[in-house]
Amino acid sequence: MNNLNKFDFDVLVIGSGPGGYIAALQGAKNGLKVACVEKMDSLGGTCLNVGCIPSKALLHSSETYSSIKKSSAEEGVNVTGLTFDLSTMMKRKNDIVLTLVNGIASHFKKLSVERLTGSAAFLDKNTVDISGKKVTAKNFIIATGSEPMSLPFLPFDEKQVVSSTGALSLTSVPKRLVVIGAGVIGVELASVYSRLGSKVTIVEMLESITPTMDVAVSRQLLQTLKKQEMEFFLGAKVKGAVINKKGVTLAVEHESKDLSFDADVVLVAVGRRPYTKGLGLESAGITVTPKGFITVDNNFRTVHPHIYAIGDVIDGPMLAHRASHEGVAVADLIAGKSASVNYTSIPNVIYTHPEVASVGFTETEARAAGLNIFVGTSFFRANGRARCIGDIEGFVKVIGEKQSGRLIGMHIIGPEASELITEGIVALDLKAKVHDIAHACHAHPTLSEAVMEAAQQALDSGI
Image 1 (cartoon, rainbow, N blue to C red):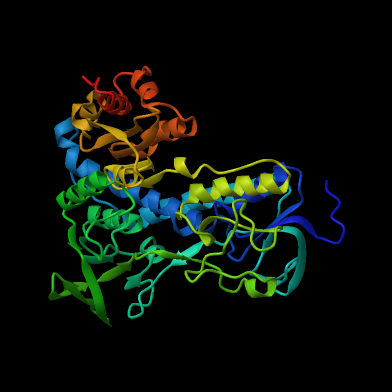
Image 2 (image 1 turned 180 degrees about the horizontal axis):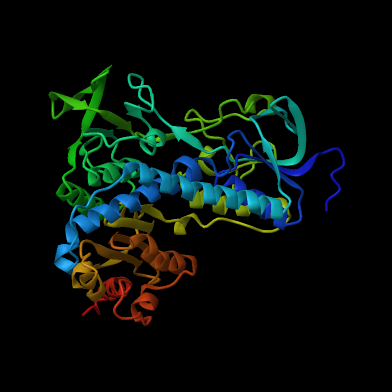
């Protein structure tokens, strides 16, 4: 145990989301005296309580219902009187969250991480106030995450105008759901309620959906979601809204025309912003960028070398697994170990059906960077396992760099894309060549053969 001298803790982590709680646990494993402060009653932050986990639980429940409804007859499974119970789906979701929250608490106890409840605000660079109590630490890790952005004329009431938080706790399925924003959160939650019977309309300012994904993947996903009876208005701007007891009426400009949309519920999914409100950063001499991000160096240090920031409060993709990786790295750096994060191999996933997953360069990014690339694509409709499970939509796209032969990008839309992308992640981490994937023996019949065959196509050796 370190000699703390005048400090209460070696490390005080502010925020218990996937960055914060992982950093706290890693710090404790490194032999440091660690505390984690969380303003909410439950641990886990946005991701566990009102984000990643509950949304995936509802996506699974709604997909189970939708899948049985659509495909049971052709598979020889006769189902009559099929219905769903939203309250039971919500209870299952809540039970999953509670189990995982309790799991974090158990890990904290096992590794002697002290849990502090309250809102933390810096008084100076070594002291924070936690609900009236002064706490000092030798090092701090700011991991307070992000919050949904609203529109000026559409403040959240989490009933008629909802953020992702409210959308995960609706008590009934809206007949008409309008989603503003066609990013990851927008299309995922639109999928949940579309499967359960909502008439879903998605309004997006850009000319494409899921703009961070490879162009070919985004186009395929748009076609797929349209076939699932979602309506899209791209290049459209929401200009105003009227809210009353009957619902919400949106004024939208699309292709130089003024349109009007009526909705029972409007989901605003236009992005998230870093959450630094009330942290007292100015008292510690820490400034933020115009967009609200805390500025850090390559080792996640702020203007003070002992105050670190990770996850959504610093610039970069707002992803839970990115924050967790940064949490481990910072905890190791504080312990005097060498550590870094390979951002090239951090994946993006969208849990629609089919799923979308991406890692590394998109084709557009690679060409813009002046790289000499080769590309291969394999379609799931030619994959034996995909045929057996009746899930043949989509493809795997592999991108290699010609001079080195190395894999630089992998993009998947199709069944189990979130799991299949791991092959690309590991390959990027190991700086593997496309040849390595193409000639590794993949079990048959598996969906992963589509990854192998895309690599083979890239090498002009596909069958």
